Length: 97
Image (cartoon, rainbow, N blue to C red; front, side):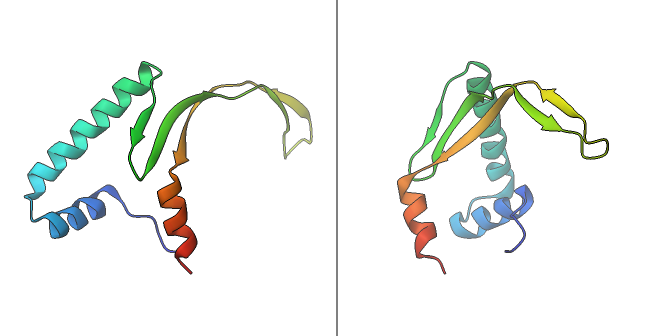
């Protein structure tokens, strides 16, 4: 598997594919990041067509094991952000070999 794309690499790809100026793409990226943060804080879903949906999920308490001491311990539940991938993206990924 190859390395994941970084934010600067995505910005460069968008610049090549859209002919927009880099500073404009950075502004859009920053605005999108701000919107996502605000909506997640409000516990709202963010749905991006043909991509997926970002949702805030609560994880349950669970038991874990300290690998060093082998001692069992309780791991408290917490909030996490989950990406539910769209069917369109799943189908595209399945076609890639």
